[in-house]
Length: 143
Image 1 (cartoon, rainbow, N blue to C red):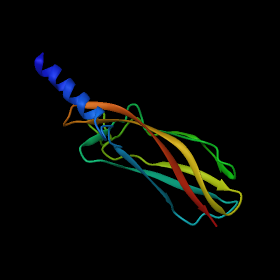
Image 2 (image 1 turned 120 degrees about the vertical axis):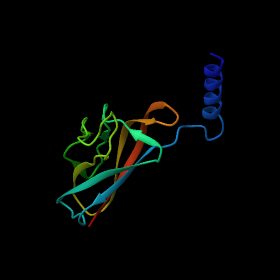
Image 3 (image 1 turned 180 degrees about the vertical axis):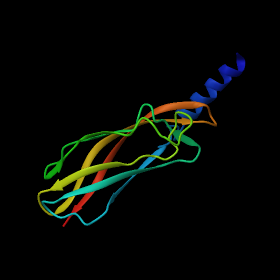
Image 4 (image 1 turned 45 degrees about the vertical axis):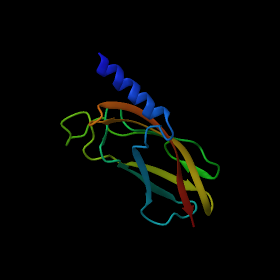
């Protein structure tokens, strides 16, 4: 019991000190396969990189909710990754899935589509899991 209490105190001290917040575990990357043209639909692929030592749960899935942006039409604003990973033998993704977003901009320019990315991760070595919410902005450059 004393070890448990000491562990809780140490964890609290680590999280409450300077820079004590949990690290951002999942990092999104945004790619467009071809230059975006005004008035034409284009696909932005959102892929993910995870910090070493962490695993991303597939249940509940990674979710992305985009916010409407003036001048940009988003075909779908709510996304969720598959809750099954055929290569996984447990509750974690082996291969992180991608999200494909179809966008159309009325005219040339630079845009940012804001959104919220929500995911659950675990640190197998430390034995804890947590939910993380990340504010993102998908950069869109239209010719």
